[in-house]
Length: 413
Ligand SMILES: Cc1ncc(COP(=O)(O)O)c(C=O)c1O
View 1 (tube, helix red, strand yellow):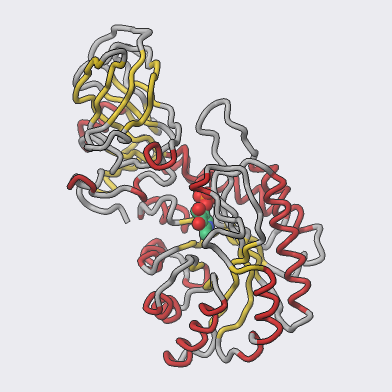
View 2 (view 1 turned 135 degrees about the vertical axis):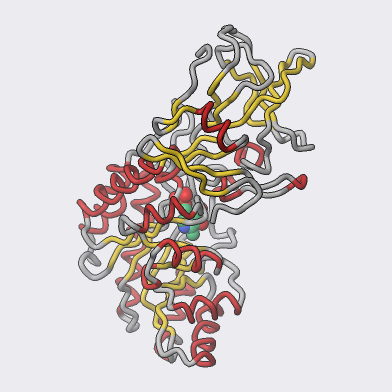
């Protein structure tokens, strides 16, 4: 790489680092738009009535969600602050989906008042609570769904699996049936209009998605017998992204076939809108985290590259052992090296390591820049101020120009 500076969305990393400081997330908005359009095209080609309710938890930078809303995306939010963000992005309340296993009454009331299009309950008590809250708020009708736990086990990191019976997520199928048989028709304001399922994240097996779709259809058919008409079938998110070149990859076409394609051939086709809550797949490769080398330090057999980004800025490696490619973005010398580096941050935790034994192809020195790739999903949105460090700056690039989305120390939402 020598002195060459990595380009991000057509903009040179060295100038980005100088302009915004480091560490800085740099998001290519064109890439976000392209991935969104690709996913939308693949899904709507198989079933036309689709709402792409982007998962705000994966990336909540205002410019990102605004770009998506401008292309017709709805919003999947998991806290009530998400309602406000989605509104600022330009999403109509009817295209907002409110998920989460433990919503407070205050949050439910705020979502009801805002007119959120679908509240996905994760217990039958939550459904009752929504109904009671509607009455006290004087709201005539709210659409609710049930997040159903079908006990589908997906092969993914344990910290990313949500679909097993023992997980805290969702309501068992039998409980949903019982509720719709005995109670749903007695609710005054909460109308059960949807089913929801999200079995985990970073999934590459099409059978998981096919099975999830089939289970949802079979339940929708059964609920009809009890007077519940499912008009919205929400298949969640979860499509994996290949962070390593060798990772198993499920193409968007094969994912769309397993979900929208299976649904289009099912008995419930034409009776419901399909909702997708994809997050990671849309934004993962839109963003790099640019970080500067503070020190290069040998320690026994290890050579540390100690950088200025820490686990508070980007927690995926520390939290899930996630692999992210690291490449030199700019180096002061043209010296090449076959040596390996362990790349770590400044936080006082041994898990604050971004990569071990990485061959970067260069000899690093103080002040050089590294890029941690594919940091667009669960990157800035999971950042914190741990160790009393300021939140990382976020910049966007588009058409060869950059802009500041959030200065250091401020939230990008
Ligand atoms: C309920 C729900 N929907 C959607 C998503 C988005 O998942 P992903 O980013 O893997 O597509 C998540 C994240 O795990 C989630 O919890």
